[in-house]
Structures are given as structure tokens and as C-alpha cells.
Length: 397
Ligand code: PLP
Ligand code: TYF
Image (tube, rainbow, N blue to C red):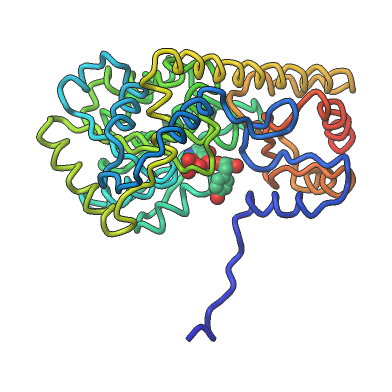
């Protein structure tokens, strides 16, 4: 049966971790995959999460199925985190939120929903974007096109180019937007730029699909969700947010995400929710309970929520410090031109290193980065910062 099955290449980013694991050099550093590591180089287990986990274990609960659209306490808390507790959209019942298998699951289920209800399935992605965006939407039957985004000369956003490309899209095109901490570049829009983008989306009748995988990793929980409020303010009555707690709760393997669909009326939101449930029923029936129970447990306890907010703040402040540290060490090595790394946001930086330079980092120093030059700043620590800075200075000289 399988004699004609071809071997397909694996995910290039996850493949880097395999190569890193196989590397025997003591000085090796994995700046490839987007994971936040603590000062000891470990994936943190947040104290707030640990406390909920302990009380869940002590309660020894039976393990029934969750509803198809997930744990209600989880979806409600998620909606409030994304849109703000006092958002008139929530009071009006216009946001249908569903628990999904990670942010990736939200992207796929959202894509399946749009494929059903939109007149034509075209997705516009920033150039560049997370490669899985293209893969997920293509798999769901979308045609994928690019819009200008990154400007290699400034290491920031080519905003004029972005606006011009958005203006050229056909009405009804879905536009994927990174809410904050753009993956892979680290180049984000300012609030003022978001307002202009929202105007173009509205005028051109484009459909916003917001990916929020790093809420709280740049400026703060509410600040990093500003784009959502701006879309609402602009009078865009329907859009989607795919969100993830993989990073913000350090719960990567628990696969906790959510799909939130904003509709023009409560009635439409209800109909959309019924469609989303049908899609999920035919893929995995219902989501898993553990990760969502952890997140809901933290978000619904004022004390634990305070603790989580503090832990999240420490993660983002540490990333800012690592960026500043890398810039300072590179400047010491005579490379002040890397100052832009401090202007970028979130876990990633498009470092500007070429494929050949990335290869040298791996071969000569055991430092793993993505071939595009993307580095994960959140994998640096005081123990490897100097080594990485010296290596980057050497290969880019
Ligand atoms: N969207 C972006 C931009 C990401 O970087 C990630 C990374 O993991 C995801 C979505 C997927 O999140 P999850 O791991 O929760 O599926
Ligand atoms: O971009 C990253 O590194 C993260 C993690 O197939 C990731 O978003 C990478 C590739 C992948 C799944 C997750």
C-alpha cells in the first residue's frame, strides 16, 4: 500500500533542534526554535501553573469529555484577556471563543471556517511570516499571496510598501496580521500604524485574521492586544483572533490555544460557533482538559492571576535585558550596527545574518539559528551571551 509514498522534508525549525541535540560540543547554543528558556537554559514551569496543578492533583477529579468547544471557564477568561473584560463586544455576545489544540489548531480551524463561508479563499501573509501560516492555510484550500512587510535596510517594517500592497488586494481577501512580536522578524507596527492598517482593511473590505501567539511578551498583556481594540474602534465588525498560551504560560506541550470569532451580531456569532463545533467534531471531537484547566485555574483566581502577571512581566523584562545585553556585547566587539536588535520586539530577531553566516555559526561555534537569519533572543542567557556575541561578530566581519 505504501510503496509509492514519498519521503517529505521535515519542519526546518524543529529539525534544527534535532541537529542541536545531536551536537556533542559543550558550547552549543540553540537559537533556532521559538521557546523561552530561563537563565538556567530550562523551559520554565510557572509558579502560578504549578499551584493549580497541585490542587488539581489533590482533588483527583474524574476525567470526562470537555464540551466540543472547550472548557467554559477557559474560553470566557480567554475572551476577556484578548478583548478586555469591559469590551462592549463581549457584553453584546458578539465574540464566539473556542478552545483549540494550541494556536496552530486555532489557525487551522479558523481557516476551515473561512473556507466554508467566504466567497473566495485567498490569504495574504506578511513577507516574511511564520512558515506554518502558509502551510496551514494552503492545506485548508487557500491560495496564499504575500504583502510587503520587512525592510532589510532598516530592520523594521516597510510601512509604505505594506499599505500599498494591502490596497491592491481584492475585497474579501483574508489578511493575516501578527498582533505583536512578529515571527520571524521582531518588527512590529506602532499604534499609529495599526490605525492606518485598520482603515485600509475596512475601506478595502478585507478580512482580518489576527495571530496572537505572544501576548505579554513585549509591552504588557493589554498593550500587546492593542491591535484588537484598534480593529474594533475602526468599525470592522467581523474578524478572527487565533491565540496561544504556549509562550505566555510556558505550556508548549499542553497545546492550549483559542479561536475567537467576532461577528456583527450575537445571532451571527451563535451560528458561527455551531459551524466551528461541526468542524472540530469531524477532526478531533473535543479538546484535551489538562492545559485548559491550568490556564482557567490561574486566570480565575485573583491571587494566581497576579502571580502569573508578575512571572510574565519577568519573562518580557528579561528578554528586553537580553536584547540590550546582546547589543552592548556586539558593540564591544566593534559592531554597533546591531543596535536595531533592541528596537525589535518579542522572542525573535531577524539578525540580518546570511545563510552562509548562519552555516558558519553552526559549523564553527555550535550556534544554531534559522537559515533566514532569525535568532531566538529568549534562548540567550548570561552564560552564553558573550560567546554568541563574539561568534556573530566573527562570522559577520
Ligand atoms: N503563531 C505564531 C506566529 C507562532 O510563532 C506560533 C508558535 O508556536 C504559533 C502560532 C503556534 O502556537 P502553538 O504552539 O500554540 O500551536
Ligand atoms: O517559530 C517558532 O520557532 C515557534 C515554534 O512547526 C514552532 O513558533 C516552530 C515550528 C513549528 C511549530 C512550532
